Image 1 (tube, rainbow, N blue to C red):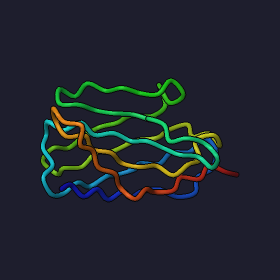
Image 2: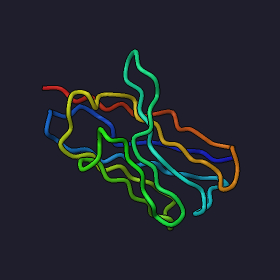
Image 3: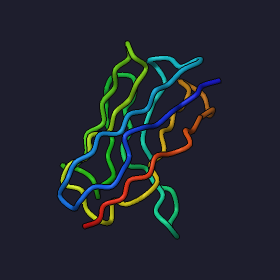
Image 4: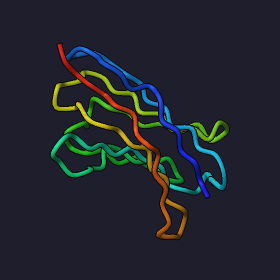
Length: 117
């Protein structure tokens, strides 16, 4: 089992920045892929960014150049630095962990990001 706890969400004005954190505990391994998804009201959950074993990263087109995902394996924590935030970035952001060579994945409960003036 893996437990994921997100933090860092909040209310920010357009153009502002936030950094989300996801602390993982339990049977998490540095080989497991980790990522951030988001779900806005009335929309499906979508991938925002992911990072895998060799630090390869993947971003949604809508956040490229604005968001950066990083990982501290010593702390079992993944971060999402979000800059130049837009109102359309408003959503519940979820942390995700996918087990290495497996279909098993885990989700956090989410942290709310609201971008509004």
